[in-house]
Length: 186
Image 1 (cartoon, one colour):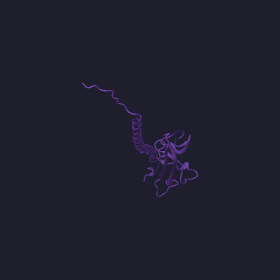
Image 2 (tube, one colour):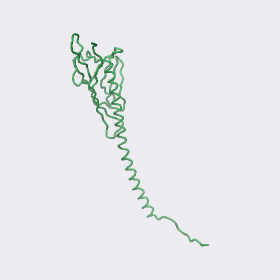
Image 3 (tube, helix red, strand yellow):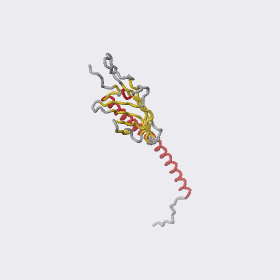
Image 4 (cartoon, helix red, strand yellow):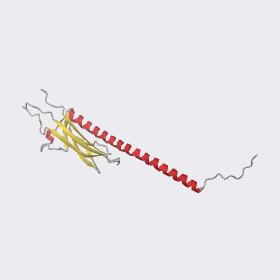
């Protein structure tokens, strides 16, 4: 049998420092690549969120315009371009509906007022930068004795900003023109 002498299997301090240095450099590279891949994903998620909120708001407004009629009497001084308030009459319930922009804390939100009941319809994570209406025609087209009727339509310009995500401060602008279905029956 062979006798083993005292073999010292150990690592010197220099070897340990070199291996730790290489490990630190590799980890820095891996973490940097990971963070670069996460950044665009957060931005895309934020943009998708704000686009969904904008489309939901447009859908609510479209439904109300189509099932109601523009309340031309609300605009006593005439309709201007752009109009910051949309006044409608719900034909099913005969209620007055008014959409407007209101400051709530440090953000702006869309307010829906039905007769005397008010509610904010935009989520707290959204700031409404622009909320304008272009109503055509500017006066009621349904006058007694008129031979030609023009179907009223509302063009909505909506610009929203996401307050939750700071990655690029995402904003979205939507514009849609919606004709009202109400009109005289021939």
